[in-house]
Structure formats: structure tokens, C-alpha cells
Length: 416
Image 1 (cartoon, rainbow, N blue to C red):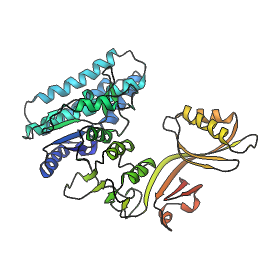
Image 2 (cartoon, helix red, strand yellow):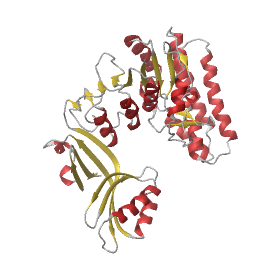
Image 3 (cartoon, rainbow, N blue to C red):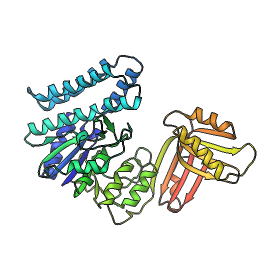
Image 4 (spheres, rainbow, N blue to C red):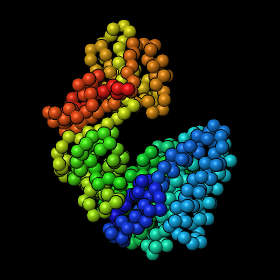
């Protein structure tokens, strides 16, 4: 069996949904399992719903707009009376009912119950359209198969239960299910982390011992750099699992970090294919060559903050200080992307995803001298060559430079 994953950009409107049909006809859809994300920016729109609900603002009008958006796409695809329209209305109504009755104050729990609506809507519409066009398929609810703990927004997969659930499927059919979502032991919806639809594809590939996982994107393959930042980018034809995990660790956005490990454990190749032209070879991640072609790979992380930390007592930076600082970082959910240690200074490049920087500085100020530089960009170059850094803006003004085997990192203060 082969697993196909279609992301939000691949199903953002009726035209792109019709293109899914073309891809299936071009590549074949026997013994195939489709994993589909929410359409376009629906996840962002649902996050606005959660925010409005939390702030006691008008969330119903936002849900009504989401309903209209999906109804209009379905009308373009299926221009006749069809059960899918009632299914869309019912799914929206279920979220409205949940929010009207909810008593839980836990943001993450509410988030997962609402945000999952996007994937449920997209798969209902695409499944109905494909059946309408004669591509017979079976819609299944991922929450009945992928079981997790109750760590909402970052559910941890119960592999034993999940694998058992998938064993009963008839592999001769075409299935369509949702990316990103699962359920806990009480059958409440959980999500697998933002951009987790790739991970869903890997989970299903692992459980079904699939021949391959293909991720269909609006790019021609995995590039060695972001074309919005760098010119003359190159397609990486082949990447080893280990190298792909390294790239993901440093922040490469094409592949979700959790996706690769279950595939590697069963030696299942992952293809990144062009949604707009299925005939292009794309990229493959598998056991084999580390990187082909072997060229520098550039990874960019914006909105970084550099902290310089030293002891008020002029003590050396030792294990106890590092432990203490990292505990404070962990308590405030601050992610560290680079660390550099000298005799009396601990230098960190961090990102403040949860807006806890002010509290972190307050905690550190009790024992340490702290200086901070905001509006930084972290550049990571894998397989750096002699002049690789020259194409990085203001590379000669880097405030941090760190070199290791196969990897060069620079932190640059962005100019206003």
C-alpha cells in the first residue's frame, strides 16, 4: 500500500481539489491511503474562533464564515443536491454545541476539539467529490484509529493500540482520512502538533507496512534553501534519513521532524512530490546516500533572541549554572536553538513561542547578569564550504558564529 499526504495548499480551493483527482489518475490509486490537511488557511481561521471564544467575543460569525467557505467549495465541485452539504452543516453545528456547553477552562483541550474541524470538513468534501467523479473511496475518522495520551495539542501516540486498530483494514480499497488528529482513551480529540499531518502519514505507513509515503506539495522537491531568501536554489534528489533528521532538527520546514523516525524504523521511503506536475521526480528520503547532490543546505530561523548570561559573582560557567539556567528556560517553555559557552559567559540563541521572555529575564536577573539582543536571525549551513556564508546578508557582522563538523551557524542582528 502507498500513502499519499495532501497539505492545506494542495486542497485550498475547488481547482486544487480537482487537481487531487488528476494526481490520483496519473499515479494510480489502487491500494492507496490519502491523508488530507485542512483547506488553505482554515486552521488559522479556527484558531481565531478559539481566541474569540476565550475572549467572550463573537465566535459564531467566524464559524458561519468557515461554513460558507466550505459550502461554496463543495458547490463548485458537486453542482447538485448531495449529502455532503448536510455533513458540513452538521460538523459546524457540533462545534457550536461543544462551545456552548463546554465547562473546561483548559485552553489546549478546547483548542483540539475546535481545530480538528478543518480536517474533518476537508476530507468529507474531497471524499464526496472523488466518489462523485467515480473514484470510489471510503472516508474514515482518524480519531477511531490513531490513539494518543491526553496531552492536548501535542498528543503522544499509543503505538500498540494504533497499530492494532489499523490491522483490520482491507488494503485493496482507497481510503481517505484526516491528518493531524487522533483521540485519547476517553475519545476526546487530540492533535499531533502543528504541521502534524506529515506525521499522520508516517504513522499510517508504519502501521500498514506501506511501500512508501508521498507528500504532495507546491514545490518541485526538497530544496537546499528557501527560495524566498536565497536565489539559485537546488533540488535535493536524494537524502538519507539521518541527514533529513539533522535538517529537520535545525529547522528545515519541508519535513516535520517526527515524521522520519517511524519511516526509518521500517525502511519506508518518503517522497516529496510536486502537486502541480506529478511527472517530476521530486526528492526521496531513504537509506542510502547522505545527500545527492552534496551541496550546502541553508536553514533560516527569524525572530530569534540572543541572551548573554554571566554570574553576578564572576563564577565560571559550570554544570550547576548550566543546569539552573536550563531549568528556568524549561519552566518558561523557551526553546534554545544555539548554545555557546565560554569561561564566564553562557550565550544562547532562543525563540519565545509562548511569550514568556519577560518572566524568564525576571527569573534570571535574580542571580545573573543578562544582556539581550532582539530581532535576530539564525542561519544554519549544513555541509558548509569555504565561501558558503558569503551569500548570507550581513554575515560579516554576525554577533555569534559557531562551527562544528558539517555545520556552521551564524546569528545576525536584522537591520531595520
